[in-house]
Image (cartoon, rainbow, N blue to C red):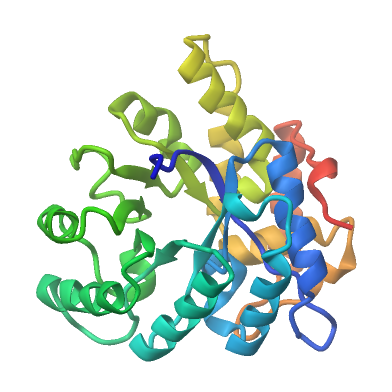
Length: 294
């Protein structure tokens, strides 16, 4: 398998007014990000409210996504605490010829490296054909991957554990493994990560920064001077002041009200924060009209 690399958006889920998943618009949203420059997307990551969306709706989307022209460009997030449900969902994805997954360890419970290794071991023994990108985000699941844990998993399963999304930022500067993809989770880390040998980026705010993130990536690999990295970091910093899902849905809803639909307990930004975010983006001369899905 070719090493996974590039700019990936942790893509948003588009919801109907009754808060059911709008499958067609969610897929269209993801495909437009690829058209804008993303090498791919992560479907049903945390930005896509995966933990809050019913499994039945996720399965319905996978069935439709399997007919997408960009089918091979999507990573599939699971967003499930249950080992059994994770395996069952992955088996359905595999049956539709999706093999690349983004999987975070379960949330809520306290555990360490040995338990995490057991969790992924059971998944891989059930689905040996899977290709898994580990999702390292202590803020969400309560566990932070150690370098030793990642190395042990790769040693044990070199054909299945193929990368890591590092949103805790304790790995991307120090983890060195051959034929292993490392993706920081923020545009603020993109250029430094590339300089250190990282593979690219998987991030929420590529829902709005797809074009300029790809420009920074391409300029690095072609040896050109960086002309947009500062603006990219400034835009990310503007969104970082708020809950990213709330900020992104608020931003998109300026042009399409369907993005106002968001699953509780999440919500849109309040009016004060909304004005502050939009004013900051205006000061940065940042517009992204073309990315707003119809």
